[in-house]
Amino acid sequence: MAWVETASLSFVARHESAQSDAATAVLDDLEGFRAELETLFESVPGEISVVIHPQPLMLVLAAPWLPLARMVSAPAGRRYFTGWFGRDEIHVLAPEALERRASGVAGSREALLRSPRHEYAHLLIGACNPALPPPFSPATFRRYVRSAWLCEGAATHLAGQVTHLRAAIVRRLREGARPSFPPGARDAYLLGGTVFALLERERGPAACAELAAADLTRTGREIVERAFGRPAAGVERAWLGYLDSLGAG
Image: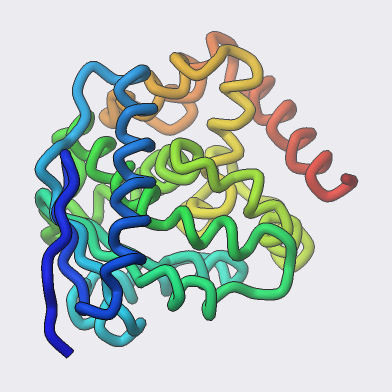
């Protein structure tokens, strides 16, 4: 099937010709998301290519770092690694492929359909933190893994996925050991966003934007202390309480 392009103000999608309507919907949502981010950040990426893949194998072939990131993640979070990002471009699964990937639990479909937002947020986070990808190399991938709680947590929070990931978060807490704080790379996708959710509850969206652009030469706990304005030990206790509340609801 032939590949074609669909353009919007800030994005150009490349997709199979049968996916034209879906591509338009993806770009409309990304334009709205970009407008939301403009209220929080001084500059947001534009002129971005969005490659929409109809099948997971096509996505993996186009994004060879994706399987490595998925392998690092806890099993409960692996289904949500459905896109990737590079310099001035993102790769995502088509909406119908995302729907097929969803589990039967509440929120799974909604979280997956926000995957294009998640990948676009990565471009913004990378622009705020020059040490992070894109572009990807062995060195930048190592830095991505080392700071995965912030990279994935910020993307998940900004994309509005945290609420929809509740069932997956609860599964992770039941299946694994007590998480470290800030979350390690294994828990970054599912639990990183909960740090941002707690911060937004305590200090508002602007504090989350500042955390997304944090100085990554500091340790994770130092970054947390600067973001919350109090000792990391107290933030950790509040965070564990927040996680407990997700399982109790």
